[in-house]
Amino acid sequence: MTLKKVVQDSSGIVGLFNVEQAAQNIYLAMHAIQHRGQDGVGLAISDGENVVCKKGLGLLSENLKQDTLNSLEGNIAIGQLRMATKNDSQLENVQPIMVRSHQRYFAVVSSGMITNAISLRTKLENEGLIFQGTSDSELLAHLIQLNPGSFEEKIAKACRMMSGAYTFMVVTKDSMYVVRDPHGIRSLYIAKVDEGYCISSETCSFPILGGEFIREVNPGELICFNCEGMKSSQIIEETETKACALEYVYYSRPDSVHNGLTVHEVRKQCGYYLASEENIEADIVVGVPDSALSAAASFARTLNVPYETGLIKNRYIGSTFIRPTEQQRMQGMRVRLNAISSVVKDKRVYLVDDSVVKGFTSRRICQLLKEAGAKEVHLRIASPMLKYPCLYGADSTAQKDLAAFNYTVDEMEQLFQVDSLRFLSVEDFKKCVPEASCLACCTGEYPEDLQDYKDEVKE
Image (cartoon, rainbow, N blue to C red; front, side, top):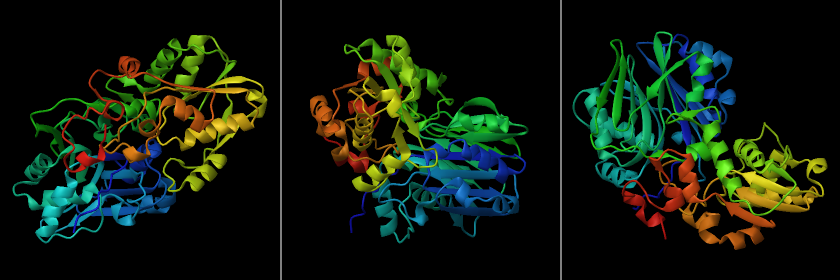
């Protein structure tokens, strides 16, 4: 039997070590990165003797009520916010993944995607192991448990068996372990919180806890937090930094910092370079809430064109991007965004968005503006064309579903019913993000061999 390929999707992870009222505090830290996943949430907490896990489908506020948080004692905790894909939405895949063995109890949360997971799972299943779900964290838990040595050595050996992009945390009754893959594709940061530590996928988790930023977790690094403090080990020597460039475009909150650059400032730079190549005139600039607003404001400022709020977002609706059918996405978009007719009517509009993935959202937003009376809509995208799939856990879209893979710019203009369409060039995008960034979704140049997913990419 051939195992079905399941592309892991974006998520956010948070960990606390030696922080009082860890349950309440990790809730706050996770709330700051709720945008990274709205389909499942869970946390594991240790009181020094026992590791307890709570998880469920849906939002943080729907699953972890105050009564539940008050019942969870301990000062070590890990948690994950999960964005599911169509084939990856079962409760078994919501993390943390708990392991209860005669040796120890431990829990695992992860973000990213192990590209040789199919091969590893097949080998383990042939040896008699049983999997409940399809998450990489469950595979990781098995690999840790199977390897010999101390617990730290088990984790290190498991990492050396895996390829791809991953960050993960493991909590035992008295320790926490943190790891980042050797390419550093997925982000992970450390802050000091009173006498303890907070670790998160984004730095925006730290201020709410009064945390003081220390540094990022290095590629190929394993950090152990225990009663002796924080101990670092370089478990994979051959490393390079290829952090995901799309963190700046879409995934991260504007106030987060990656590689020393604020997401808001990078988006402003993208808007500036996008405007620098403009050759069509329009009356106003409208940004798509929320992740395109920084680029849109910069675009308007560069061209000296009025920036207007022409779209209103309903804050209580989740992302339409992951809805399984086109009809559901269109229905969700009508509820999620509304155009302000008095702003756009009879106007030539520059519509600035962060990216085009499948194109459903772009098409509907352009329709909204036309229905509201816009005379012309000129769609401007503050990132390059996404022609290749992300196989590192940031986006689950198959290449065959990517608009930029299937259509030329002229064809997308017709599909979206816009008067013109232009993307930020790869060359200008490289001026905005760190030199050592992963741009595989734009260029097709992946940092490493794609292992089990080689056939997912076409030229």
